Length: 411
Image (cartoon, rainbow, N blue to C red; front, side, top):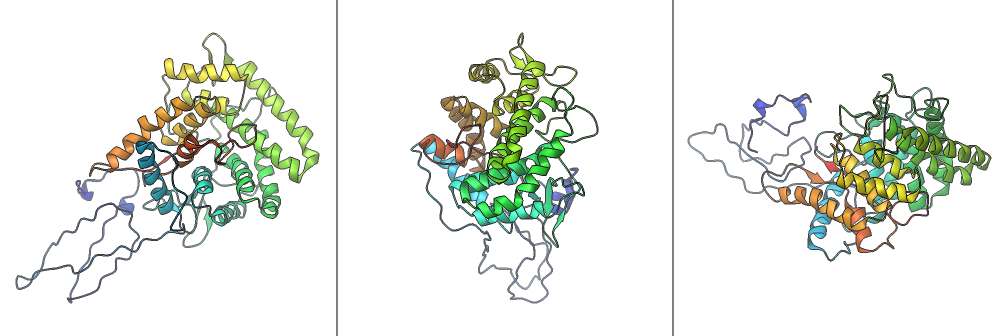
């Protein structure tokens, strides 16, 4: 709105910018713009017109498109700020629900597994379009690499193809999405059919373990965790593997019981290795990589993976707040997992405070012309704060008490 697109010098292609040039030779006319737009404001510039006439718009209409239903259960919180965050969250998720759960309705309209995981959790307690989650699971399962690894994202137009990006953590999250889908939709037939794909993600992840049970750190793999160039991701990757193996164990108990004993043994091995090799008692933190780096991401994911005893994990989260590591959180995606870890450790009041401090600011910005981001997925947190009896998602090795999903859409 305020900056000319001609000045854009970003590393992403400028083709995603929402700009349309039209030449109208005959007026009056009914004009339909060919592209999809996601906007709060529309700026129209008339570059040239006959001196004998003026240009007038009789009617401006937006055809809003979504696969979400019109209504969803209301937010149960009495807190006005949380209600405001909830409204923006629901609208943003609704915009992202098209033929698949899109990463963003404006630019990156792909289906990303990491985004799907959080969007599906929010969908569970809002629109309940479990069929859309099911479709996304099948798209990932049907477009794997030759060795069976699930791609990090899928293009759905003009035809469905998997991207050539493969991420250690995202492929494992297929297990978690399937787990949560079965919990929410109670669709045993689909979960049973997709279980071999989920099992394969665990098998591939196990090949990255060294003899002691720690994920190998090297330059020949890619794991996301957070957009943080200086972040060593070994410890966080260990946490993701343990976290997803816990859900894989639950699925194996239902679909392949002969694997249960091996999975339990592997889970004990991974947790023991993490506690023995990644815990630094002097610092009171988990470390990562040869340089023994201390980061927010490492603490968050190993807490979510339930490494160590509950008192140790609680102390880690409290220490993060009082003595924050230099390697901080960069994305709302990782901040979601920070909130989830707080909740898992029983720090609900602090979790609500962090939600307001971070996503509340985004909502305040969105009420002004300078606001550039919409919030996608804080909804589970808000509804859980109102009532812990609302079933949302499990973030631990206990039956689902209800936890979370949050990220920010900047597309």
